[in-house]
Image (cartoon, rainbow, N blue to C red; front, side, top):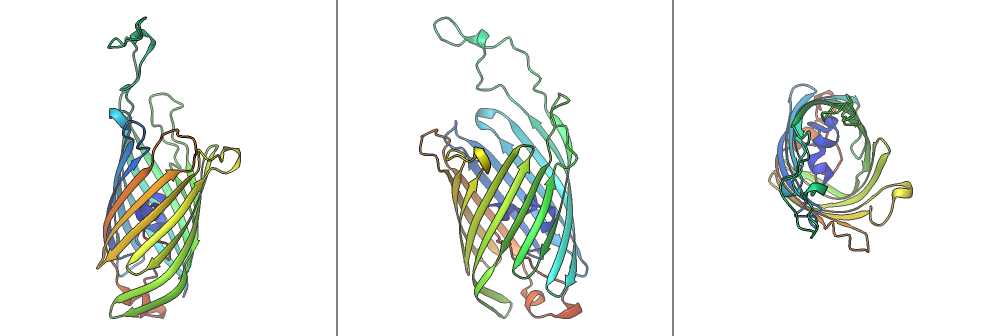
Length: 310
């Protein structure tokens, strides 16, 4: 559910969907591999009422199966919003983060541990450089959006941080383009309450060195329910059924509280049992719809982006 944790995608999203919000989530990935990888993340954002500034914070804990690799990263965000025209806005943001990660040899078997009969002797005499390493990372991004359309460009790890003990152990920058359009079938605002029926197709392209990925999704909003269906592909020769996935999203919003669930599964027919991924999101947001729908001209300082919330 990329837009549930949109502050991790592009810091320019900070403050564009609400006056303030707090979000937390848990994802279990590749559940067929020794219990799978797990990720816990949280984010918060606040948009200042009388100016064009917003701030936020993010936290992520990523852990491999059986006590292996673990990464912890936290960041602070700032975004500046500018209304170019009555229905055309620009947002620019940046994030400065601090992270640490540590590998592990848990679950690995080395040659000196193998007996002639195939049994395993513990421990190994191999030596490792498995000390925890820390790094500073910088990200930035921009968004151009109207009431129904948005397009954004973001760059993560743009300072090419060193994340390991060797000089070549750096995190290459990750560049991403996000875009989408919200088609309204019906919308109604009454007494600080907004209802809608809309459809939102989205596209996202990600590149890191030679790796590239294309995500396409379509969301349906029928207040208070959001449903989504998407597919992920690796363009070019890498795009095989093993690399492609399909995902579904379901979410409910009631009085500012949101709960969402996401499911992702590989399209591979052969049982290379990496297993499905599950994601659960909980959040609370405060939105002043009066600022969005009633105020006009110079009095309207708040324009909300049209991207999904899950």
